[in-house]
Length: 197
Image (cartoon, rainbow, N blue to C red; front, side, top):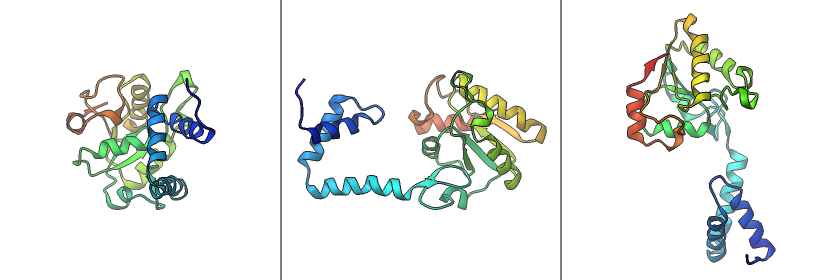
């Protein structure tokens, strides 16, 4: 394998560290930067710096935002909360355009194999928000896999005695798949066909 000069090799390695980027793709990205204008490279670097300096977590739901409270939490009804594993899942759910509730990011799922229990994810914060917002329904939009199902069932058991309706997205999303890769039609059907748990 040909050896590149150190700055090129370093850039390739940084691109390779991104999820889903192999060596060949990282090389193409590096060449694109090299062959582009200095202005484009500077703008790219500035965009990375800006996102690291300006983007944080919404103090209510945990979504990425450049303000203390995200636009969704500021403008929507908290009677329905859609619970997701990670902030990128909110972006996936927003594709369906007919959900007018708010979100809650757990930042993980219950996973005994990874030593993650209920206290390691944001369940206490969810319970507090439900009380504050007078929530009537919680939609569990965790991935349809063992951890996602276990987390959904655990939260449902906590909320049932409180009289909160807990639903799960319908199985239009195939088992073991990631929510972020589902298309808007599949997500829309899954939201419409959600079932109580």
